Amino acid sequence: MIQYFKNIEGQTLEIDKPDMGVWVNLVPPFKEEEFIELSEDLDIPIEFLRDSLDIDERPRYEAEDNVKFVVIKTPTENNSFNDSDAFYITIPICIILTHTQIVTVNSFDNGAIKKFLNSFQKRHPDKKNMMVLKVFEKVVQNFMEFLKEINYRRNQYESSLYNSNSNEDLLNLMRIQKSLVYFVTALRSNEMLMMKLERTNFLGLNEEEREFLQDLIVDTSQALEMANIYTNILSSTMDAFASIISNNLNSVMKRLTSITIILSLPILVTSIYGMNVDHIPYHTSPYSFYIPIVLSVAISLIISWYFMKKKWF
Image (cartoon, rainbow, N blue to C red):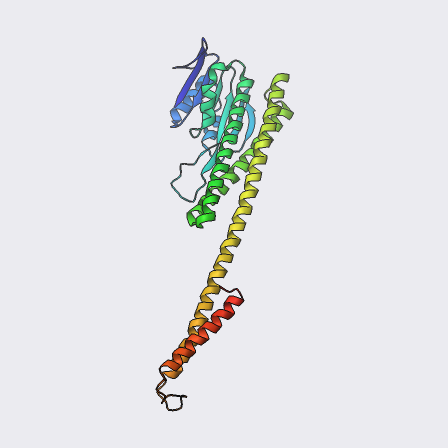
């Protein structure tokens, strides 16, 4: 679906066709006919539009026929029905600068474009470079918000795991770990893209815009550092819980082994006295029933005292 937005008297209005100073936004569902129509109307290479459909598209930029093409990654919630998939993934936002318009293509619905739309009435579509940088800014803000949400959920699952040792909490922590892998990879690529844009001045930025881009690089580096810190903390936590679970398992096995030994020796005594032979001591005594019982209890108490002394219980 193609959306055309234009600022008219301080208000963002959606119009029916492209015009000068219009922001063109493509959102799912996509149709090949729309790609062809937009490519012909705005003189955009159709490969630029089709590349946006690849969820694994890396952050990059290129130019063809005076049309500039920039790809940046942004986070979004994962709507997968698989319980082992990451909570959050990263998707590409494709930004295309034509002679008169700025075009954004989103393979999925995402919060960065929604924030950009909510603040579009403050934008100046004729300043296309600043429009691109503002999209970058919303992407960085989106990463920061998702990282805070990830850290909050991680603390919740860890607290729950301390009390229950639930497999579900471990699975949720693993899903958060997968999300952080996506974030670290995307943030590193975004940072490299912005640094390369600053070094080559691909967009033709003026001094004010270059300073704004430098601030965005700093914010992206901060988000990347946060993601790395959360990843390291989560990895250490998972390793610690793995050691705790292993120690708990060893303790349980030690207790079960101790109980087995305590029970096996009295069973041996009663088994011996249960033999139907004439050479068992005191087999003719009137107390022959109580002798194995007393011996069994005594052996059990002695072994239990020894194990408790060794702190095997």
